[in-house]
Figure 1: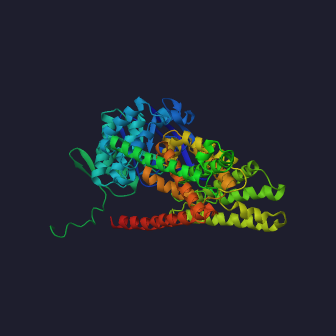
Figure 2 (figure 1 turned 180 degrees about the vertical axis):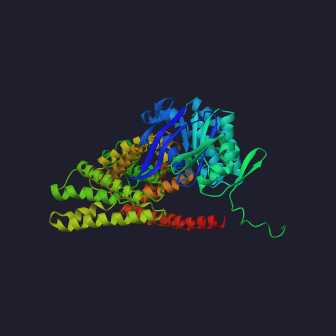
Figure 3 (figure 1 turned 60 degrees about the vertical axis):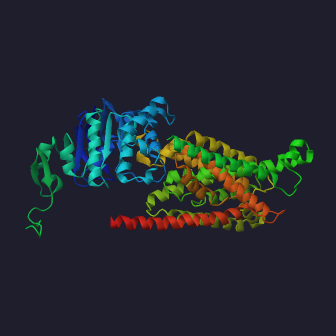
Length: 264
Length: 337
């Protein structure tokens, strides 16, 4: 269980990025963090994974402050993937996924590790691509390779920071479906920063909307994806429509958007 | 997977055979043509002496220095996440030179060990300073960093030169000139090139960690790695290799830059799998250059750094142009899409 308690985080003298944030992560669900640029989503994710240690307040993993957990031990519980990785070295998909076993084996792969790597590759349908170099495959496949690595890392908690960046619609949907499978079939707990509200609405079980370093509202999609909540969060006028029981937000200016010239 | 496995084995076999062939050649070539390995083995006392005291140490020095500089280059590239970093293009060599010059000026001619120690300290401090500045500057264009590094190295060289002028009366100018000539024909012994084997072993032991830091700080932290400590370890290894090879054989320009780039295009960057191939690759390259330098005006020999500069310079230019042109090409594509 991950509990975030009264986190205050600031850069420089007085620029507060997070102002007293408290949150209990819901187990075996997808939690989406949404909010405008600079609302503190990525900072919150960094603090929750101890990438940036909390300045004030604490993050508890099963009741223990994560700042006091050895980094190697923490890496067996929490996996974290930052927004799309820019690669400077040439490695294969298989090499990458094997790195995921590092916290468990320190680079010396045993039978158990090899099995986990093969499973992860299989699970994301990357078996036949295992020996391909990462710079030779498409952006969507690369993102999938990174998810396979996280899966091989075999942690109950997975944090993803804008995993849909630079992915086209097909790969974005595929990505979210994979994330959904991690939760439904493998019982993982996923916390994901998403820019697209509609993806959050369609795939997340729980949405946390952030504004100015605070949690503005959290709840199931039907409670958060409403004009009443979203308008102040994004300082923008939203129009929400109901489509097969899912809320879809339209965010272009409704009055000014002109109809198609040809069909009236 | 098995197909790939055999492909890798084939590549390794080829580089291995080349390596052994060149080692034998390197041992056989010398101004006294009747002294070869066979003569030494047969028990010709004269041949044995030349072989044990000249030919063998020289070949070992070539192999160790080449393997070391290749590994040092790759580590620097992993740490900086820039394919153009190396001890030549980050001022490390020039700092090592300054480090060997200072004890000479103030305490007179020193043993190789003292020189290596000073060269190591200066190389390490300089590399730390340079990487810190580079990280602070956040330069996007990767090709600017080697250019900046060369300027930085030039500054250190200028400082060394100024110092050597100031202390010309103790022979500092001749000393500086002499240490800047890369050569495997130095009169001194190659004993301290053995130091290179220590960081080489360390590099093999920590290979996976170095590959992981090559994927970035956040990536490394996610896997529970102490990023700063591993970077520090890598830089210590780099400085140790640069300093000891510099004192033993002088600067061998471009090796740390072009060998990792060429080798990783064949073997990839997963150090655990490719570090031995990388070392062999570097050794083959320098052995070739060394043999060429010894043959072009036989029985005299050219400085090996001249040959390496000529060949390495051309290869470096190719990579530089490709880096610039390739970068532009990619950017143009991105704007179209």
